[in-house]
Amino acid sequence: MVYRNKTYVAFDGDNDIRYYNLMKAWRQRDNTTFNFYDAHDINTARDSSIEESIKRQLRVRMANSKVFVLLIGDKTRFLHKFVKWEIETAKRLKLPIICVNLNNSRVKDNLCPAALNDTLAIFVPFEKKIVQYALENWSSSHETYLKQGKNSHYYYKNSVYDSI
Image 1 (cartoon, rainbow, N blue to C red):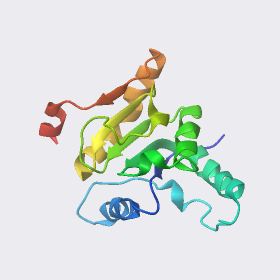
Image 2 (image 1 turned 90 degrees about the vertical axis):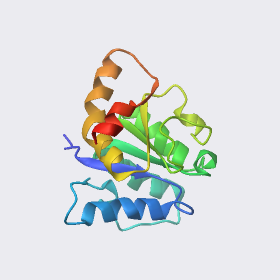
Image 3 (image 1 turned 180 degrees about the vertical axis):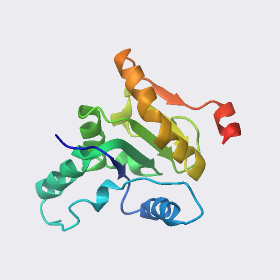
Image 4 (image 1 turned 135 degrees about the vertical axis):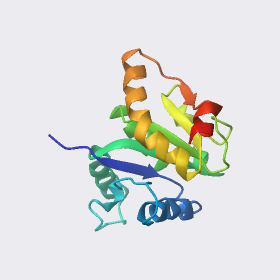
């Protein structure tokens, strides 16, 4: 049995990698509590020449993940080759999905990929404290909602933002 303790982060590698790198920087700062175990640290040797080879490596990373984070930028909804596949794989694995809006929206908006329609997910803006809160809390809520058969989009109330 695989021990799932990683965070899988999906994003538009051409346009939004700086946000992923910023998340890693948040993790590395000594004076912050932000932390996540990055699934991309697994099998870092790559054969990027063949799509199936890349997907095989991504499947290993996702199999070791306890949560799926999607960074949603201006063009993410148009990425069908990998991002759509990653979303569908996360859904199949029943991973808790945290959607991080790079435009700082707190809710699902028109930038969201169609693959997330009718999918249980939480939406948060790209801010360190709320992303950390979601990483720490969404998994248990996700499990409860799954048992109830829910597949809606969620967001945190203003009181959560005020408390953090």
